[in-house]
Length: 613
Image (cartoon, rainbow, N blue to C red; front, side, top):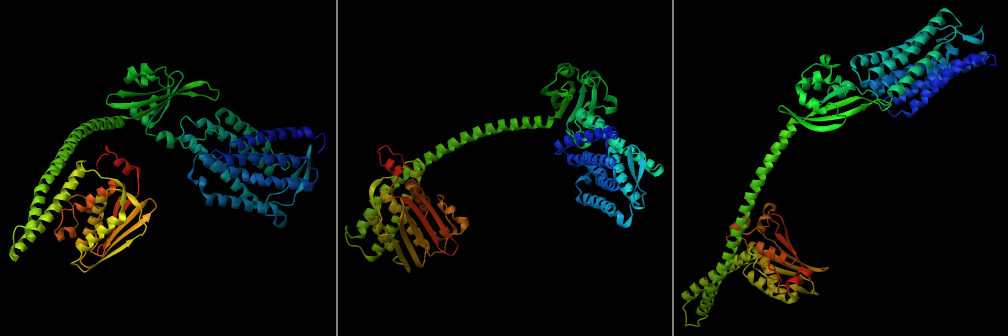
């Protein structure tokens, strides 16, 4: 290349600059749908123009052949990139098909392989030659059978892409039609230039290729679209999918208050088809809503709820601006909230009814609590009144049995023993009822001491336990730590807790063993009472801790009131401890109790004003 030929390259260089500028812009917007393929399109065009410039500027045949072969690479991928971009632009389902993309890439790579190995088989073209054609020497060769197939591939993809764009243009209404027209024009210009060049190649050998100029012109149109309509900032994502099928009414009004677009939901709302509405003043379109029209005529930005007949509508009015931030109209979005309003009214009504019912229920609950407390107080007083004369009866019966009022025969002694046994059983039942009623009425107080010698209390418990099972083939086993600490609590109630658990185990264990274990665990004591009785099934393990409720085994035994374990749990909890059981049917039962050695709660109970259970 010399200085005399440089001016002839200026138009091609300008074309290259335009294409490179578009490529840079496209690369900055590659994140949008299809942006990568659009970038590949304009980059390929830029490379093709650069290769053509170097081919023209070269003087030797070998140099021209090198740059000519170089141009085949971008020219092969230009239509492929354009086709894939269009698939994404119109949201065609094939856009994400890996098989389709792989197939197309493979076909084009196959053509490139034929082109670069052409010297071996001459399928694409014959031997090349230079033709004097000032100001540049022109590379010339004859095309063979492979070239028409390459043309079919290139223009086939291009025409299919244009057909998809034309179909999208036909289905679009107003929002994206101008964008699509710009794309069609921008793509058609280089295609037409390619047809012209091909016609000249086949008819008049040596003519210049005008494709660089058509690329530049087409890219200039695309550049105008990029800046005028934000081509890659607002890709039309199938308008009919979003706008046409949305349930809310969408209405677009221009600056002079004419309806310029609406969707099917809006047609239903205003009861008129779009062909009779578009272009009409809002006074005509919304003539039935005269009062609302006057209220919202000049409002640019609003969110409000209105009532039209029996319909409740939420209206959103938003301003529309062009790329220069000039107001060009308003977007009206109308959402039917009739069902929501009805639901809210129903919920409100139900809330009022529920509030009334809750109030009535609270009154009933307070009355029930008052009655229950009165009942508990009555039972507590009644039990106390029953226990006093019963205690006297038992005492005098014991005196009689001991012969303090004169000798008795055997039949009399036997009768008095039965009276004494039944009386003691009755006293035990009355004591249980007295305890549970006092607990429920809040009348039972713990007598807390801070010097409870647990070892002494356990001696009494063990002696009583052995007496309970003396007539049964049951072994009583103890596993007690030697260094048990002095603890805080109500020693009488602690004995009651352990004896209730042991007597419960003795009642249901006919043979085998009962084990009492006491272990020190940090600041608490762990008590365990285990037996080899029939066990408690899982479904009854909650029930046994409820007052006046018993398991099936308890009902069969025919003894007790079902108050022992509930009283025991309340006494344990009053000490700040826990009571639970582990058992399986036929495998015995183990009750666990934890009691704190000392605690602030128990210390507070030692004060004169301490509350009861």
